[in-house]
Image (cartoon, rainbow, N blue to C red; front, top):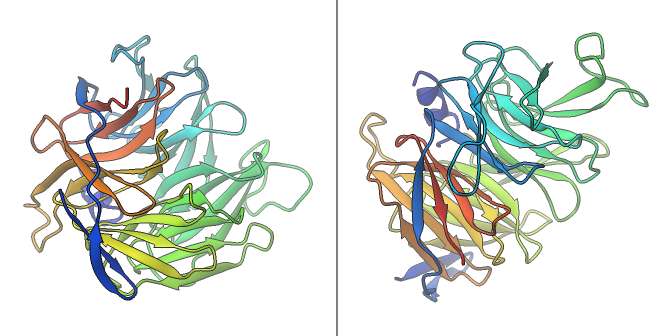
Length: 353
């Protein structure tokens, strides 16, 4: 889902071209590797992750629940309700404590739930910060959160041993330290552990890629050629570079660990790539949500899952349901790719076997 612009909207509700720094060249076309199956799931599923018990966990945004799905598409338990009405769960991942951690976009907090459905105490960030993406740090003992509305990156870790920004009196057992992004209203999107062990994130509104030095908390920024490209998802690729989506320019970018833009890959026939992951086949996978345009109320759907190799080979797979708007993708324990279809209230599976 388009970070910031479409997030706020949701809150109220072949051949490829490689465009590198030196110009454009043709990319090889990859053969199809799987088929898509869809399963009904709750209302507005957004975040999805493989949990510690090897089940899928889904953040159901508008109904304020965390769903649990087996790999046959069934639900072993009823969804777990989020304690506070209107929190708007968004991204979800397994934390360093083997519980499920999820962001609550509308309240700007981080929620936690066990695999058995026990709801744990929320972790408080800056009020109304727009907690968006969440990832475990390279140290295995911290969680990192992008605060989309507050223009901050938050680090959460067990209390003791260092000073807290938001201390244990507010968040018993945890410390929260928040770092301001230098560019005003940059709209931090997805965040990932970089090849250097630091945290790298997309600055959706600013058209930049940011890096947090995990030792000092210093943030460096690297501008993209098109300020309006709206980078959203980011991940470290198997080649040791940073790969990221550019939602509004319909491209996939590649950046070195020193912040040099290495390439931009164009040619998507769907549009609006959102988050991005490394699949079990060592290719990069990303959902294509919708075509960007001047009228936010009438955006043609992308309705595809994209795959790109580290050499630029591009393939796209069309979702069976029209206007499904896939937004978040993950790898399941079954070795397949699973993704949420926010407008269709479904979860899709792309088989790699």
